[in-house]
Every structure is written in C-alpha cells, then in structure tokens.
Length: 256
Ligand SMILES: [Zn+2]
Image 1 (spheres, rainbow, N blue to C red):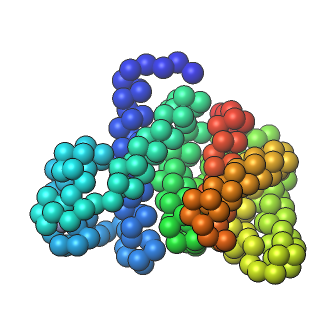
Image 2 (spheres, rainbow, N blue to C red; image 1 turned 90 degrees about the vertical axis):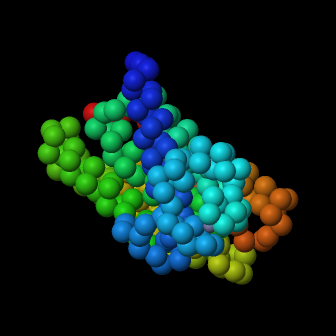
C-alpha cells in the first residue's frame, strides 16, 4: 500500500473525528440518549461544549483532564478511546488505503469501538449498535454484488449470508452447551447476535481461523480479567470484535 503524507494525515484526521464520535456513542447509547441530534455538553455542569472543548485528545490534554467550565474531571478513558480509533484507522489505511472496501470498514469502526468499550464497562452489546454493524455489512455485500465482483448471486448467498446463519447457530449452540456445563450464563445474547455480524462480514471460509483467534484472545482476556478486575463474569464481545478486525485486515481486500 503506497503511503503518502496527505493521505496519512487524512487517515489520522478521520480517526480523530471517528474517535470523538465513538466517545459520544459510549456515553449516550447505554444511557438511552439520542446520539444523532444531542449537542455535546459537560456531564456534570451541563454547559454546552464549544468547538474548543471538542478537539479530540488535545482539548483533554490542555485542560488537564478537567471541564473548562466547572473543573470536574473528565475520564482519561475518552482520549484513550480516541487514540485507539486513530490507531485502528491507520491500520485500515495501511491495508486498504482509501478504497471502497476501506470505506465500509471505516464506517463500521466507531460502532465496533463503541461496542468494545460498552461491553467492558456494562457487559452488554447494545442491539442498535450490533444492528448498525450488520446493516453496514449488508450494504457492503449489496454494493459489491452490483459492482461486478461477485459473478453470481450464489457467490454472495452461500459464503456470506449462509455464513452469517452458520456463525449464529454455532454461537447459539456454544451458549447453551457452555452455560449448561458451567451452570451459569456463559455467552450473552448480544454475543450470539454479534456472531451474525461476523459471519456476514468475514464469510464462511474465515470460520475456523475466527474461532481460533477468538479463543486465544478470549483466554488471554479471561485471565487478565480474573487477575486485574477480579470478577468471574467477563465480557466476550471485545474478543469477538478484535478477532473480526484482525481477520478483516489479514484477509486483505476480499472485495476490491
Ligand atoms: Zn462542566
């Protein structure tokens, strides 16, 4: 992938904007707030935030992590999220540049990032965010089927649509068998729904590799969760999302 400076700067800029959008989702979606039309305001003093307060990462650094109006601390998690999204955007750029395939992945990034953080914080994968990732994946298939990448409709239906169903069924089977084995809910309903998204984006051929990567990431995270957070239940969504992202990058431009 050719790297040039203006494009690289554009990828960083995109990452900052998407990172900022992700933090809005992380705050608003679990609180059932409208995340499309609400103006950003300080969560403690409610004063509306000006453009000066909304520069990703920098505003937080210059105000030393405090609200400029009331002085209340703003969690370091928000600039960290923004930086992680910038990193993810740069990885997508490195693999795909600004191709059409990249556009679909960029569009999905804020929602994937928000799902990851919300699952860590609240142990849920909100339906609306999962649905948006599914919808973007579906539009991606429709777009590429009309752009002539797929030779026949069966090329889409079998690996991706069928893949989505297969991923969902395996997840459901895992949920029931593991829950039965350990005697408590093992794989959440949100996780099962997210498997449908993974199948739709990656297709059937990625299934074995996906389960291997998810398993490895999941075990590492479970151990970390036990040692650091010291809770029995641990969120599985971040492992699923990390594995999906890694495979999207690794499998290269499936759709040109
Ligand atoms: Zn304030």
